[in-house]
Length: 130
Image (cartoon, rainbow, N blue to C red; front, side):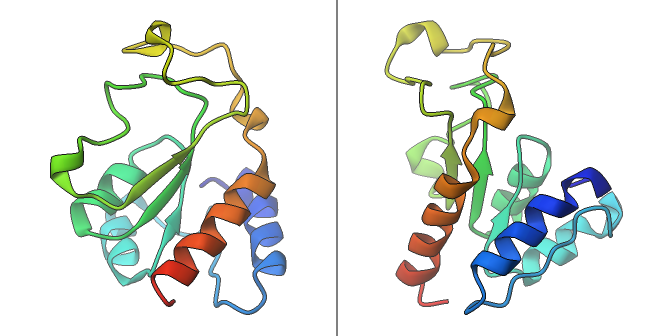
């Protein structure tokens, strides 16, 4: 993330005190991202290139998403066997065909609740014994 995302990363760090959480928001370059992601146990990143790079290097990724480009860029087909999870706003209903290949979503990314991301991260960490 950008330097503007640092506060959210700090929130996650403080609420996952039993787990080593590193906040790289605004601290690395795109050229270094694949190396950093490959070293991670799990990544949290919004809808940018980061979840795709995480999938490419085999690192689990949790992606808060407002639903933009649903079924075009995410979720990945099951046969690819990626470990990417998408957290959508509470009112986003992917079963509704109107969202398929929807180019832009009216939902703000800020409507994805950080408590939902934190809850899912704890589940991923527990399931992977991290």
